Image 1 (cartoon, rainbow, N blue to C red):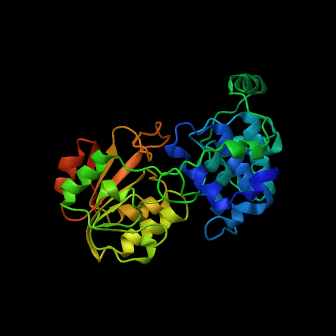
Image 2 (spheres, one colour):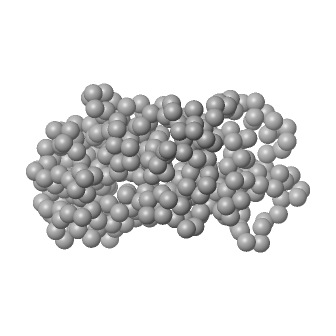
Image 3 (tube, helix red, strand yellow):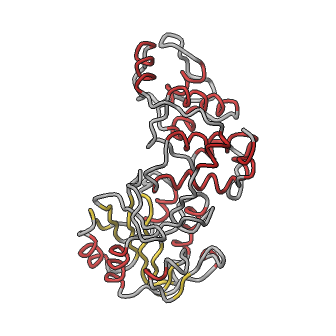
Length: 325
């Protein structure tokens, strides 16, 4: 990898990779190139506040929505093995079973697959793929673009969902969700992760941008929050939701439905109710046009004492439920 790709900031590339869930045109090829770039020369260590452990970095990567071609998956598996990633962490990041990663790394067959002494393999795993089946899978896989990584990055659109990382093509919350949030809370007094353009729709009494980060401010009144989805910002904003809880009255937060993540657990630990939209939300670009269908669903979390009102209004948007302590 050479050329302009070296000019890319690791945070920017990482952010684009994570924000791919909001961009229906984001391809498997682009996702793999982004990950390869971050793994090269240990750039992954410079993401966010920095990672010392490759497994911790992989916790931020989720490529299960992309059907990664076998050859590309094997290349990534072996590269991650060279970086001393555990097969379990690699499998979770790439969206396959640990046994699959073990075969990728060892070029093993059904008879010679063994569990490494320093790793574990789930007892329930993907079925073993015979050589004949693997050849069939190769044929059915979409072809891999052979463009050099720097050429791929030249073509990568800077699509981010909220102001984060590249700060170029931002994506905003649809008006009907903002209107529903305002009906529940009566007003929106604070938006901790916004911009002047976004606030034309949100109409918060006070809003914070990436320049005067909401992470360092006090949140008052009724809060609307659609945080940056890239790590470590998503975790930091969810922690702030919890620690700032004593200062605001109510809050409605729109996030990915990452129910398996630590940040999601932090968020729901102070929540009263939740809504899972019946369809994936199509965010809005600067021109007012909806995006392509995102690759992941969302969750709308309510914090406050009006959970009945929240459920009554948001049941028109999706499945709702109270959250018990």
